Length: 183
Image (cartoon, rainbow, N blue to C red; front, top):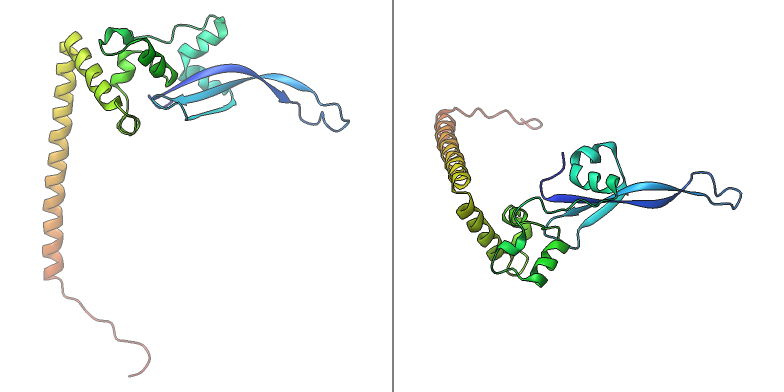
């Protein structure tokens, strides 16, 4: 399963047929390649021959390639729904693989922090979606609270365990081993 912050583009790329160069008669065959992008970054991508797993990992992109239809990437709320995003900002976001308000709201911190203005845009996207779907926002808030409570309990358990270990270490008798060599 791919990382949730990636998307793919499939294309045909000529590939040299192994052994065809021996007689100075190079032959090529068409091979389907997958270029994998990280949402939020225009500089991060890599291409490689398509794997069978790619069809399952990137079904929307694969369907677009197969149908030669190039299925609409936007499967969520259109970016223009955010009042602060004009046509040029939308094109810049699309170039980074961000095609919907949901994509923008789900961007990982590591991609948002380094980009000028991106943190604020993500916050606006999250607020927009919370206003649009308050029941989902409430469920997400509850999930975050449960996670925070679990983490707090884990920290308290670790503190208790550490205190017990310190006490056991303080009560332990340390026996020095005799030194080898001179007596």
